[in-house]
Image: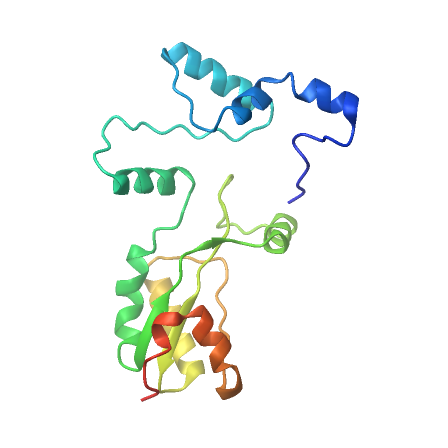
Length: 189
């Protein structure tokens, strides 16, 4: 993914022109703006789309709490629903110890670039790539565990683009516990 500067203050003439644009005004006054009519909102969204922005529209009319807002944002931004992952891996991981699922993060630019160069038939247009990390602490054969988790996730219809595992041996446990803090006080078995 190539990122470019939206407003470039190093080139004075260009910057003066950019400051006259609709998006400059909108971004300077904040990212939340209330429009009096639907026409004004649609016009503003079209202008931003024409300038190359990705515009997401959310209908907040039925929201009654903050969780409603979070759910709507997650759905509109293709945020992965990990609530279905826990029951899938629980039978596999529950026998060997404890696990922690970290909040998903957008995949790195390198991963996005690789996927653009090597597209997958599973990936849909506009779909975002996310990194999902699951930490496990307990006893057992890590390779067998990894295979069991992979098969459980696939059988549940949760088709991840890629799955891999990292083993943190005794010398690296401190780094692992910084990342997976909920597992740091759990005995090894």
